[in-house]
Length: 345
Image (cartoon, rainbow, N blue to C red):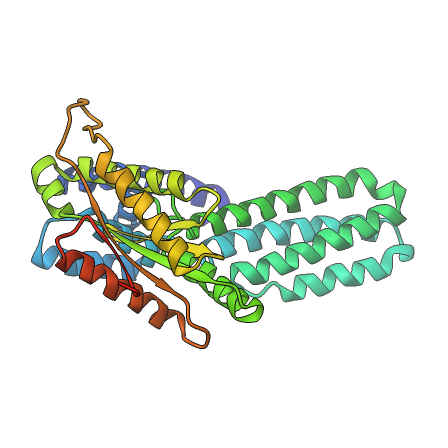
């Protein structure tokens, strides 16, 4: 098949996949978001075997695709930036290297050393490179391009274009990295990003002897919110919860979505006393807030939160750090909810 035929076939297939994806989204009453569209567009195409297998297994037992299921499918099978975006970046970088090689050949033997460097980077472009590996190569190409520009004025205009293309690729990779670390519903860092932040702060705490505390926050009776008002209102409550946490934690700590209706606040340089102060401020903020439906503005029942707090102990791993805060959260729920429990209580 010639290249033109492939492109025509691709357009036709894309249209068919679009139509089928919209049919699935409508059939299963799935919210139309970019992430959900990506899932069902891939499913309609059939090329993502693992995704199709996972969805087929779900369809055997249920026709319900709540938000958690869609987020899980997206994170497992679509948001694989190391594979999907890495391949896209590799194609772009190869194009830039080919252009640079042509330009360097045209200048003659004076630029042969730079030509060797370009060839070296071309050999590094393996098909199984992850985004970090691609980023390192991009950095090297940018640096080499800058050297060439400074030593060869007659190549400046051509190499400027190459630099722009590489910069665009680098920005794409930065965007991919950010999206992979962000919860699509709330815009907060997701669990993976939280664990990276936590590992860095634990290392800092151990090396510098500084305090590090954590709050685990759970929305009380969140299932009743979904049952009484529907999942769309529930999703809006989760988004507003993220906004409230960012407001209270500004300049104090980092908020992240841990999963479902659970959130985590990581508090660098905060003792357990400071954690109590921040946690109470957050709890009271929710307690007095007047919640309204986003679709019609009508008031809804008060929504409260339960909180557990712990302070990092030198030498323990992050799992134990989290578990101690989670144990305190459990005690808050046992004690009647809408309360904060810390290890000293």
